[in-house]
Image (cartoon, rainbow, N blue to C red):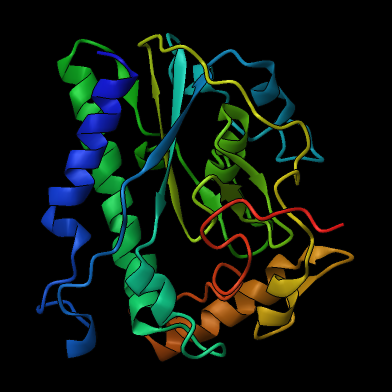
Length: 269
């Protein structure tokens, strides 16, 4: 099994899985029946012993609670990170009203994460069938995430993606990839050795033009040019959407109608 085998398996799953489409039974309204959530994924492959993973244990980055690839899987050789870009329908829908999340985006956030988990499980199964021990940190019983006070976890998809070479951080703390930042990220750890990709950047925010469009888009002023995103302000707004749109929630205004929505933006002079 090589990189192309995994990529082709993922592309086939994304294109053909019923889970990537909103059925009438779960659709919020008729407007989103048969909505396709994701386009084809892009991948980045990192070495499990990359010293940059150890840097994530620093308190100024994530902290000691971050578990290294080999702490999840002692025989780990490769970390596989992927980005699933939202379809144009999902992105376009969230631009209609810049105050509240659209039906399309709500499905993308909730059913979209369910799909990410299923894709991770599918790829993990393919690796196991090929004879390679593997696991999905986000689905492992040891995984935890604090979204109420410290806004941290023991496995950060965005930071892991940065180390693997998938992209760099935006002013709004999202990850800007070759396909932009409107989408979601997943990852696996495996004992299969796959050649690590070269990081095409050096700085954390190298792909961000600091244009400030996400600052203007944020409906509650949670982002500033000086300090980036305030997670507490953002989280309180997400809690409001959880009440309004139960059992779904979301926002995503910093990911649409911005230069980095679907690509790496040009640097401003």
